[in-house]
Length: 380
Ligand code: F0G
View (tube, rainbow, N blue to C red):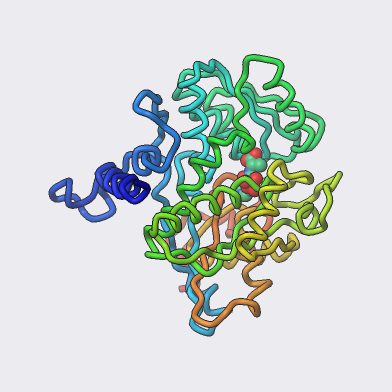
């Protein structure tokens, strides 16, 4: 019976993905990606009556980063899962297409979240598409400008509190209990359901699970979601192994590493400036089940990885670079010929201030608009 269900599930999964075979003259991989709910419908808690709210999120590239692999050597292959290429520029879109579709299905008229920036941008965009109001609480002064701009452009009601993310999350949890607003932080189980599809995509591309999955950790929703995805695919035989889940926190905000909440989290990677992760217990279970570990990386290590990625043509936000920083920190522990995926959770364009402050490349200004002067400045 179970086998039969799985076979049908596989067939459904196949028929739902539009491939180059089903669309004549469409180059491979350019075929009409329908968004992750349609692509992975059999694996998600949706029904025919669920309104699918999508911006065609998902299907993000898995990019080899040879210069980072070369720092490790020994035949190790390193890829980055560049989830900054989602419609609002972060992995949050994966969770939000599910959370907002289900909220709409349940008749919600407004959603709320606390956010270090990316969740607020995604919640605002998807709520708008669904015709719902979005309220977002952010820590005043600690959200990258691009993310704040997004939330405003997508029409959210943005409330900046004189406090940190953890305080904002406590407030929105209470608000969602007492008022007619649906909570769309990662404590909403549909968020994790959507986000697990990133693990499906990794396996679909690699043909198996990687040896290590390196991932930045804040509230610990995404590491939990990836693990759910790998386990689900493993159960139905899409991969024959499971990765070690390697979570990385910024040293000034590393509650899962120090083993207790951090009252005043501090890091330039503002996206993961979180002292009391909402998914704490789940994160510990993932660590144990996958034989993974949580480790801290300093802001300097994060910035080093951020610059290395820039030199590979990959622009991520500082928090995302924590995954690569962590890998480099633990490189001695990587076994020969391992395949490693580092998750790049958000796009570098969201945080131009960090980019300008932390590049060692500078532009030349005040140049006369004259051919010879420009050529001379170029070194010709
Ligand atoms: N990377 C980025 C770019 C993020 O925005 C976040 C979380 C994380 C990593 C950590 O993911 O919380 O699932 O462990 N950002 C949330 C927000 C908190 O509000 O945008 P996590």
